Image (cartoon, rainbow, N blue to C red; front, side, top):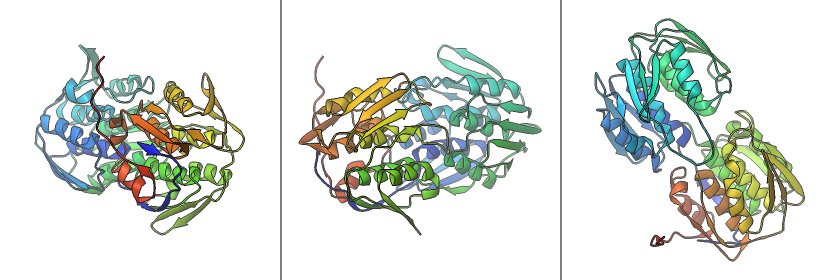
Length: 418
């Protein structure tokens, strides 16, 4: 329940990245023994991934802000549908299990309803590394006595495919070159952990990764990279509400494109030793955006920025190049009074001085966050349902908003009968 009219002001902390920590947990499978991750966000997906690792024979200890994973000499190799369907990030166990066990059986994943995210590049790359891969009864079944290094090229710099092939290649025989690899900070974070485990990697942070396979890896301790999407959400909220927010722990260098867009709206962004500060003292100016793989504008911040353009001065166009179904939430934004028209990959937004509160529903994590920000600049009360999506990506979302001065509360309601 979001009551509009509040100005966000104060300091908000950012913890580890959702889009990194699940992959780091999967990477622990590559080495026998106990690995420990810190800066672990308290989000829904982490305990689900912990359950999945426990099913594979690991001893997992969840603590506030940390997780320890003790991996047996021979982990299980089958990831069941009942857990995999709940978080798409669980497909990350495919590469490590194949590399460690010589086989992996992982259910086809679920996750957010934002469009097709096929596994063609994951599977094609594993086949080139020497695996046989089949889809059987809703499972990806991969087998290889020993993976062998090769030359790989991704048609698109897919984060998931880069992670899968990277984690498979670190224990392969010989050299693997992965061209057109994703460059996101979360990929760099995974590479850093793998290097700490003894992996031989070159080109980290570039579009070409060179992996020299090793016989074995060792467990490690690693701090998760800060969540740039959470940090960006608070930055956009500050601009929308004409506020003043310090994002403690946020990495401005990981948000160069979005923060530049916010400066174009009229905001002041200051980089500080432990984060960055965003200030806005007037109605924002509408700004166009085009989503692209990193270092371009992140698709995960597109719903929040569209909400910003909905109350900005002028007209803007947003172009979505990553997920074809990311406009599903636009009908909900329109319910709040936004003037948005979509056509294929494009959305045209005509800014209005104010939105109006209404009941809306979250289709995915980022759409839910964007609708909450829209509710902050809407007259009356905005009631957002299906908030479990937001819990998958944001630790203490409501509490953080309240600490910044927002009038937001969570209510438990009975499911309506069909």
